Image (tube, rainbow, N blue to C red; front, side, top):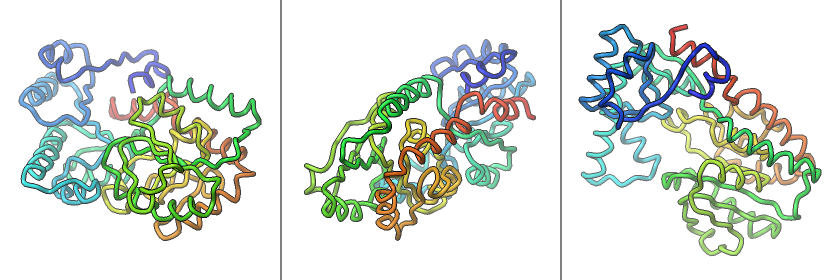
Length: 335
């Protein structure tokens, strides 16, 4: 957000601080018109910062991109993320979400990444909300542009294989991946052209566990190497369970792929179905139709350059830093 404001609003100065900087809270307040606190759990130091800022007429906003502030959904979060439910785990999750929610309640308003999540925040705390979607930064855009130019220079030439990519990031997507795992095992067995790439902590299970020679494994990546690995596959897989928690999630996995000319096949969650124009910039696959949709995507690979270019254009139009400045300004200054 700092970068976005710097690109589009030269009259606005923006910077960031961490919890380790709270000993200089008075200096931060003195130099700011608005303070945004991101996903922070309640501490007395944050409470003092918020109280002091509000007493001096400063605007204080909370920023969060997940449903991790309302303990009424803790059981759903644990179930969706396939987490343990020992007393220790429950103590951690209920405490962490409660503390995040308490910090939110102390603020003047909330910045969220989509309307579905914003409604949950309004129901939780009753504060005003503003929507600023997740978006790409300048370094990601520069690297991604170089990746796409190399693809264009070869006429989008492929190596004869068909690469399906699953980019899991954190070790909490087992149940999301389970939606498509059996379908992938079946397709890999039937079509020798297919290669599955898994990046992150996910461990293939069931039938996929015995298909190691057909699966490329990469450890968790930094955000730039992730773009490179996404750009090397034709189809980006984004299976997602359908519940209140998952519908709050952003479309990040789709536009990170689109910006490197990779087409996504995704579950039709609240944000994903808005990020994809079916059959034009990607594909939407309800849980019971993944095999059908993947086969259609594979059959249409001759049209891949056109679809990839369409997805790229949509990502550039919606998710560049400069495109977000107006929404950030509206939130930061109450527009």
